[in-house]
Length: 107
Image (cartoon, rainbow, N blue to C red; front, side, top):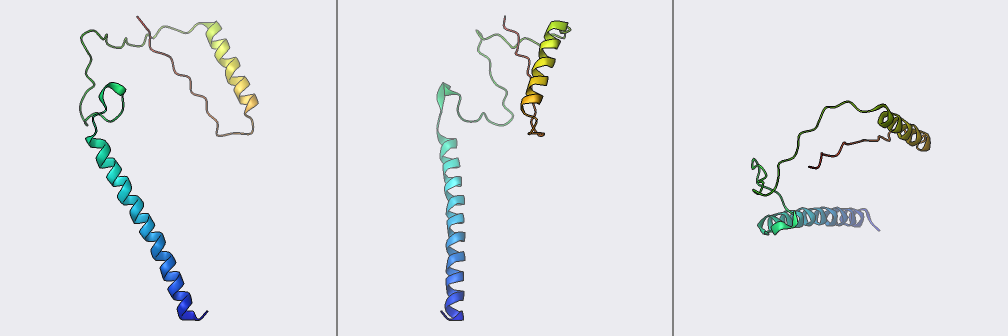
């Protein structure tokens, strides 16, 4: 293979890669525009318009505010035990984090 043929093969290979990337960008944009036009209904898919607050129906109660009552010593002991067990089990993963979220109070 001569040097000219090598450069042609290199240029064709690079062109194929960049054309493939451009096609990927095109299809991602196309699917994004198509999905914005679809009415998803009540299935919970899609995005709300920016700046729009979620509307509550008259029969749906508003979320109760979180109470700031102190946590009992028994619950704190259980949380500390769970954290210690998690730390012991995943000692080889120093970047592992455990997040505990308090559920909203149900009326």
